[in-house]
Length: 128
Image (tube, rainbow, N blue to C red; front, side, top):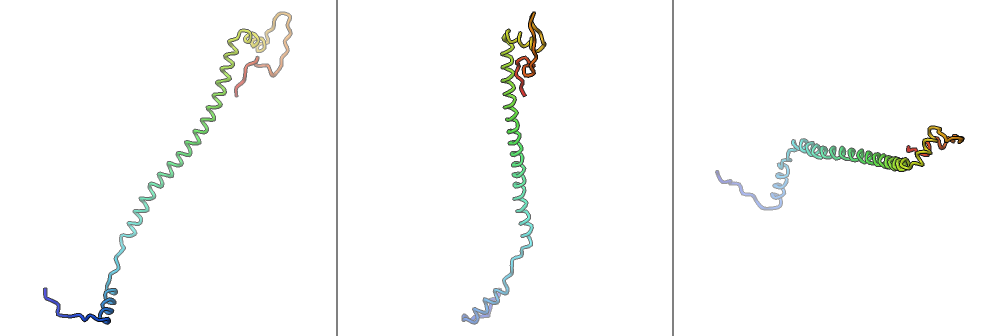
């Protein structure tokens, strides 16, 4: 390649002129792919966020189910205790006799039976 035969003077005017020419010739970098990159980044951030929201909703519904089932469990435990108490009562022959007399209106000879609504079940505990 041929050597340049132009010599540049090193003074304020030439330096200023060179700076203005260089700034006018500087090309602004093209950002044609910046929108695509931005959309890709947004999608990459949105997908885990959607999964996180779904997981949170599932967690909340399972917490609600757990609370509901715990309440049902407590109610069933109470019913089991009532049934155990009734079984224990039914193992006693004196109670069975009283229960049969109250429930089925049986009576001994010369005995009068008076029906009381509160004792209509014969002394068995009702579980609700």
